Length: 555
Image 1: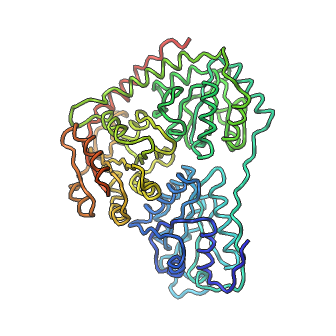
Image 2: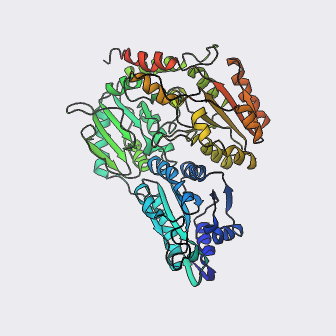
């Protein structure tokens, strides 16, 4: 603990943030934050001024996602705070640790009646793990510590602190800062581990399913070691993509669609599913039935049981530790039969490689995915916004390193791709980073191009253009509705990018895409690359193709 004397509350608040190791605060301050802003000016924390609070929240959430430490964002009261709501839900559903700080009018005496005042804490409570107004300067150290603890504790998520203007300006004679201790994570029960190992030995076709909850830094190595020692094949959900690389020999595929894809053939053939990190925000890509496959639930928390998910065994505790202990208890089992899984893996790889060299213009989605994969190195990061292309990248982009596919299949909000990529570029300046956005999603936070240029980021923004809200248009077509109400016009994206001081490129022939992306990275700075897309493949592959899936002989 650290003793502080005769200190202003805003200085104490910032000292508590420094005590937690905060490097950046992303936000748009207002007049109710001015004491806090002055305290930040004199601190070691860097303020990243954004053009909209939503983008600040997306950057803070992505910081939490990539580092495991809560990202911090700042807004004023009223409209500033309401602009953080989508980012709060993004972090909460996506299990990204994040602290939101908002200002408020003086609470002891106010001369402005209800001007701009809403119940921000009450608004935040349903979409956060913790939301509190600070009413006493003495509790600042403990409330900041508690907020950080809860944000990072499994399951991670969003927390909120409101610092009123008059409280921030008060002075305190003496106080203490609390140590930011790293929590100890419990181990799974030894008896349950023994039973799990025996179930794995007895199974004929065991399969590992990697879900969103396993996408944590401390899980990557133990999970990969488990796969490599046991030889057990694996599939992953969209949010579990990249925990183990997609080029791994045991990788079968990603469950990018709800049902009926090749990967579901493999899942249905398993007699035991080891479900690592199942998160209820993603429904499992299988439906359990009495007398069907056995399921081992491996997670930080107990399973939420329903009519289609009722695991026969639960290993509750730290996921990384659980898999380390399972790996120690297991050896390759000669009676395991992975031949069908291997056959499906080959079939899936053939399927997702189809069209990777297709020269037609506009390019089909598979060609765009393939060219992005070609230009990105092993540690290159792609940050996907939400749209039709997300399914194609989830299905066909093979990751090579953990945390290199930033994909949101929880809130699935549009507008997050550019800010997320900006954050990745900020903290990993030597790595190639690409924001992949549809024209609809890009325009929701396109003003942050100015922020990216001001921060001197090295960043490529790939805008996939179809002049429509393509995902909903696809669903409209699948549902048999008339094609109506979902198309729009775009600005000249090249002139738009150049106006911000970035460099704009328009792809006018498919063979231009790869060299344009490569040149953009060589030149450095912020580049926008616009490419049209031919979404006719959506029907051929994602509707007609799935209806005709032949799972073959499962043995």
